[in-house]
Image: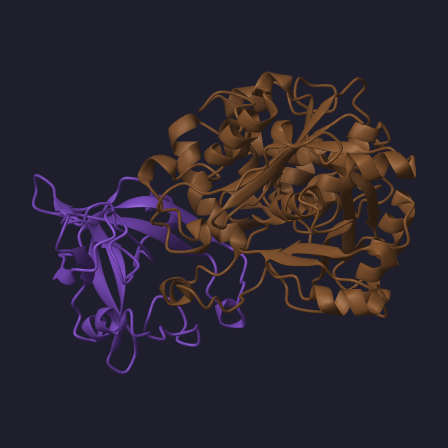
Length: 150
Length: 396
């Protein structure tokens, strides 16, 4: 079961970002990268938002990052969300990708566990047969006794 | 784009000579009167206020999401000429004051004799802004993750302001209660007769944490219009003219669609309303400083926009807004009174144009919450979108 109902709008790839969504199908997170100034940027655009170059590529990133900001949504603003509130919405700052941020959700966390600066890891969430969204989980670390803690 | 008021030839300087509004009602309140009918009522009221015939209007300006094209309005008014017709790009009301700027440019340059800036918005007749609406640009990065409404989008930017500067629910409560209090003297306000206290504020349901119900603006039905001409023509009409001392629109680098996009604004700019460039242009044009502003109408689609905006416009220092606000500075009798007619939170949601109308009333001395001896009024536009705009109005 996906984090939010499958009846929510699904991504509709454009020529600009079909590569991004195709890679999501393969559970790979790729981000636009400028071959001239080596800056990552998002969302995909036809030229680099730092230097204007059109010499662009894509780079796969690990998907680890930190919570940059968040809100807990209580009011259902779409009919499909009626039984899904409250849910979280986060902005994740990706590691190793300039200052690129993704709007996403944290799976398996209580609202009070979500805070700015918390480390997160990518977790692919299947929303349709073969279609995955990049969502995240809080990063766990081992404590002295070898138990997983948040 | 900025308007060099001080360098405009005497007589050609722009001024506001007419204001008009339909009755404001809650969403669905205007069931039997179409949005266009309300718009025409507002324009005719404004023309009457200006002392002209609405058929003399030959310039038309509005901003993002307006449904009624100028050629349609011209036809409905039976106006002979249309010499200027323009709309400002962008959502979230960012183009509101810029529509007044466009009208000002049109009359000062001689393209138009009498120009109207207008907005009609009946959320009971068309879509609701508080519910999901498809967003053609970048919606695929937002809607699948449940980021669908402006309250959520603004909550994300404001959350970092809280984290960094200590703004809190107490700050937001002070704003919501202050603005609602202002509406209690304004019979046009949808929330007239409905004061708000702290208990009611905190008891209200959460919409998008930290925003509770009364942190969010109204969904209303209505229309409003403002008529702009030159000082020279205003003098001939013998009507009070409110000078537009400064008007500007601007956006910082890499802001794109801002909170209504994918939230990839520059990190240092994230917890702002992207208005520092607008502010700089306004103060340069007018030769005024933030200390010269006597009263302000700040775009208040959400309470959380206010702390960020008053910092961007220099009405208090960066990070000082929580203490400034909690000291009562924004109240009617405070150091920097704001949204004296009740704002978008408590008067009506005309996407910001009703804030300009209240600015004009303050400068005419006819507000229901008149700030005595106020000589300047700042009016700002825009919340969660990309570019922003603003005006400084002066005394007639």
